[in-house]
Length: 438
Image: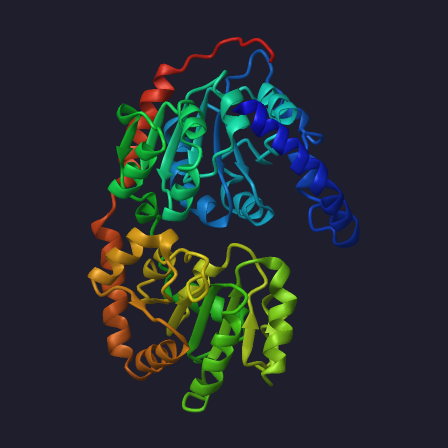
């Protein structure tokens, strides 16, 4: 089956390469990551010297997964300071967040290579990890097959949507072979465990650990920090409506609601954080079409008088702090069929998240928040408008629901410690050894 997979990957690579090269030349979109993904730009100091200990390699797909990995990386760094760490991300936004949040704890941050056999061999033979930790789920067969030659593979915070499960079920003989490369599969829920077992994972290697996102560090800002952030944004006492991680089709809904809400709440400012950086300009122009005064976050002059209604958050890694300013929060990727984004970043600031019906990627978190009155689901624009106005009109209710959301986090802490017990066992088992180049 690997022969078929590699043949298909080669065909896909040859078909897509002209597009990526053209986009890189025209827009610079893939300029930073493409050389790394193709295995051309390997940092010289990443090459393992005979006297250097083999590193732990941790991988996360994109922004959400990188943020989930932060407490894990911090814990490993604190307990095993003498062991180097390499961290990889697949997307450029994920890479940038990793640089911002992890560079002081890990030795190298790199882009995850394309899953072409000659590329993964070159990269892995250079890094030679002692342990590979995959955060959440970004499974690539060639990479796992090659890295298993050097190191045990651990899945942390694993999950599998119903959609992915149905897709994998079509090729159970191949998924079983791929999953056999894992030494341990730590998953979030019993349902996730059932799905991994259903596509061929070995029962003794699968364990339900809970969701590591509940163990995010305390990020509540002090009054001075909130005041400083407001000053940076040119804000004073205005109330703030934050729409985080929005996708195409949601921005129009948010702008419609803001236009209606602003009639009864003249002081309110809207902050929209598009999920993908390439949409910053698009959403900026869209907000202007609605007649609003719009400014990008990076263009705000703190000393100038406020002359805007809408802020487009065109920075990476700042959204979590922005939530601390919010009077009301909508979490995107949920009114369109994406699967939802991180609700716990909102709850961590004692805010109640509003979200649409499409939250299958956050199913367990959403279920827990709703059961504890710590999250509000809306089905459409009309319901979202009602809930936004309700929370703005009743700050006491908003504070109560936000506190309940925060309590959900506190009740579910401890997942990180359970994962660290497993990781420590594998680190103790691994020994530095010379391996033959592939």
